[in-house]
Length: 285
Image (cartoon, rainbow, N blue to C red; front, side):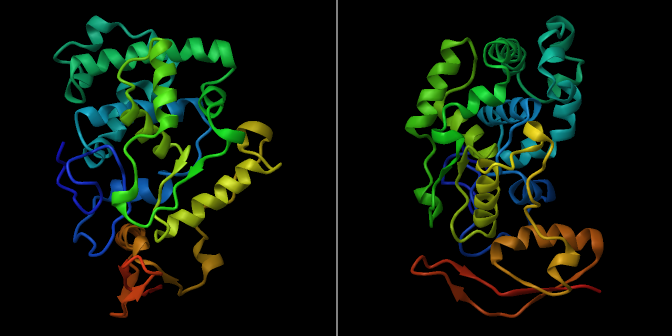
């Protein structure tokens, strides 16, 4: 499957959402950058969000991440904010009608898969108490795996853990949950932190993982929330240096707040990886 975003994906596949190496693309969709900077790789413990990510990961069989994310509002509207109770009760005949909004998103087969998975997900919730508890029970110590990869070519499309989860999901009646889809899901919900070590989000997601494993917990556990992944402007100050991986985030921010992004034309090398980036300084107006 070719998706036309070679800097982000291994050649020929649309399943992995990778950090870019080397030269950055000239134009990156804002929704795509925001997904990388705010969600991908950060642990998720909300059942609706987990169901959403399982659905979007399954949609990779028909389209790539940029296309999926550009239609995310429509996905949420069509699938009623991914409430499995509501999705499981959908009238398939009306839902799959050619004139329905859902028909513009996915094939009829894939739409049926989402409805059936919602029904199976409710069974999992009855058995485990939550889909979150079920998903994370596969992880040693309920902690994510950390890839520590330096190159996109090192990031796998599936792992033994993904194979095991895929097999169990299929045994329970879930559809469209092959190992590559499951691993894309694991990456999206932070069960696997596959940000490259040269990406600024790698350490941020590791920090969130450490918080999740501590006694503090997440909002769903005791009302406390994890620390912000990115410092606020007040905390960070008027100027700060960032790695090239942050260009995507800063580019999106610049559009909204009319900040000026100044590039020093410096090239830095991280270790022996050959990862090239520029030292950037973000200055407020």
